[in-house]
Length: 64
Image (cartoon, rainbow, N blue to C red; front, side, top):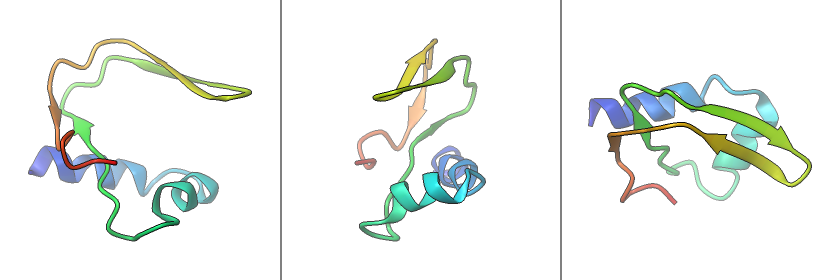
């Protein structure tokens, strides 16, 4: 679960608006993460576009 904890830790460093979106419904929201991220995220008018490879994701079955 240490890798999964890293996802929440990373998300806690996001701007206030992004954190509010993640945790607005419940403070128990779980953010999954990867030990070796190799992708990129690009903001678009409709949200975000992700590209890359994430070979191992911890906590994916627990994230909303």
